[in-house]
Image (cartoon, helix red, strand yellow):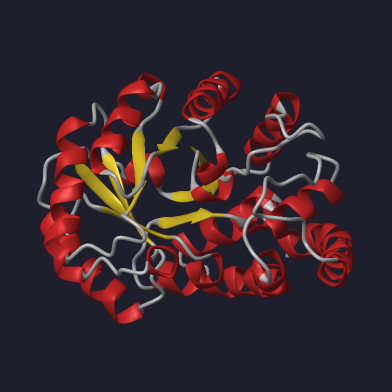
Length: 304
């Protein structure tokens, strides 16, 4: 098994996909976003996660975004590429077309809608791991897939040679503790929930793949590094400053909140493809005020 813990500890950011007014991929905005999060201190980038609106991207667009991202990152930080879905053979075909030579791992969400059994989930990931030329990171997000990947299944999958870790977004702290206790020593475990990242790191997770780090990379990644270093007092202070962000960024849907914040920061335009729509005015105003306030709070909080 490939040990990704030294490479992917800390903050990974699941990038949004910027669009222009014609609803085309906005590559200049994507380049600005990549520079912004790297300069903000994130440890790695995740391209084509669900935050990137992958359900409304064509296969050709996904390949284009991944290639552009790898080129724009230019080896400054590692890149992980997302590839998931309910059709196992289709996921494998997608991985074959993606520029995996420029990435360190594939992040693959568990099957959605079809609600396979735990054995079905195991066989799905086993087939993907066998076919993938780079290590695979599991992604458990039952709020979107309608099926939890149970701890026993995670630990069983962790024994396969090309499955290197998991992004855990199930919110079940007992399951997280069990996986952390019984995992192989080189099996990466990262949070998939910004609001739980601080306490989950305290239980032994290696970091987080974050949505909030799109818009607030400096304060969020500093919080994660403090938590990983065991400086819980500083990590809590930073995390407390982000609590309102965790609510506002997800209050209606993801990535409507984070795109609104990034638009306010002048990094991207606030366009989403249907069926997603921009954040409603009542929450957009609150997020605008919060974003302006955090800019001032961040400098003071991070220095103390």
